[in-house]
Amino acid sequence: MAGKLRIGVAVKHGVDVVLTRADKATGLIALAGAPRKTSDFDKNAVEEAVRLRDKHGGVVTAISVGGPNAKEALREAVAIGADEAVLVTHDGWADWDTRAVGRLLAAASRTLGGFDLLVLGEGSTDHFSGILGPRVAGELGVASVAYARKITLENDLLLVEKDLEREVEVVAAHLPAVVSVGQEINTPRLPTFLQNLKASKKEVRVLAPEALGVDAATLRPSVVAERVRVPEVPRKLTTLTGATPEELAQRLREALASEGVLP
Image: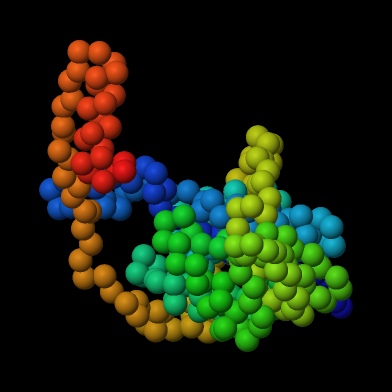
């Protein structure tokens, strides 16, 4: 690996699915004004990128594709240890799907001079398509390795451990490469108050699609969801009574057996 190691890490400022609610009137998930946060898997990606930088030297660049508020996720990445931050945004960012995001991440990588290693979370906590890493690698024409639980660099050779059902697979690929990591790869550090304060003052470079050589008009969704509904789960609200705990337990068992829950 000639020269300084250049590591890119993708960071998404996604919807906090734990705090979303369904609109009872429409049956739709109320996304307008829904709270957002750094995708959990992306924190693992940032942590791993920083650890590799600390071990091998180089520079970590955090990149986010999304709205203006994604600067919050980028500054969190800087607080964890990223050296610089880049935001790719446009007025129509809310309509970008995985295809558009993958294309923009690849274009950003080329515009920024190319990365030896681009690290992503295995999926985002809101969409979790699990295909963004392979999409970016396909756009760049480089190797793609997914579901990494351990990453080792030996000069320009990348060694990745992957968990299979009954065994561990070790994959080797030459740099440059794109790697998607799972949460078992590490435990992201918690930045200190001073690190967060310093990161809050960090300049975030903002780029439009056109600055990356991408026409924003070509980023329209390839698949459109025509209808989304929250499924209704009817509840029987069965009341069980019994004179003693033993009698109540027996009736509960009988009720569960009638539903097929117990044999």
